[in-house]
Length: 296
Image 1 (cartoon, rainbow, N blue to C red):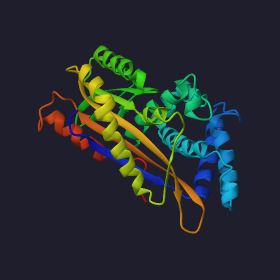
Image 2: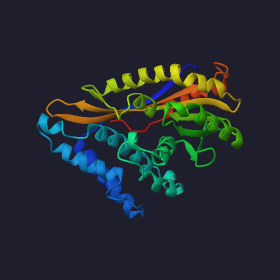
Image 3: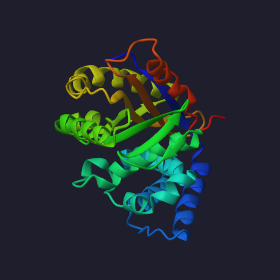
């Protein structure tokens, strides 16, 4: 594959503030008419997080469902972006409602639709929140950069065996809509499925999440994705967006642990684009324009 260009944001937040904000998100959505059961994965995470915050001893800490905490932190970080995007909320009520399905952890999902929609809407939301003109339309959404409209077919790859079929479907969708575009794909589950678990990183440095995400992405692109990207080349597929979120337990000075995540998106121009050409240059610039989540 061509040289990738990164957008990444390490996120390490005060947990008291995070849980307060997350409860506010759920209350806001309920007041907006969304049905969110107490048994949904989002309220279940908040309950576990509330107990986690009260933890003060190592013995108590070891009793917590740490994969649930790490993945739940990522879920709420992505849900927060979806909720903040008025464009996504206005045009995707049915899809947002479906997000509240799914099991507590990804490894328990027999049906992946809830988390599939979450990935699609989150990706569209961060473009919208970064100031791009975004339209929710086939294949999944479109955005504009420097006067050019790009289409995006967003696919969450739930297992290694589905890489080829997901790329094939995305290419067909882009060809059908007739607008040059990106195949966007989430590869989180490819990593964790190889371990047969819902995994997380333990670190004392949030920035190390970026290094972990970067090295893992490079390895996966070379060993698992390159063949599918090559096989499903097309003049209308101008690039790929590889997405990988690294959840973590972050050791903090003066307290037991915090939670963190690094969301990585790699923008990879098509094999067939001329280096230095207008389309190639635009694709290399786009990740630098993505501003979500805000820093500071």
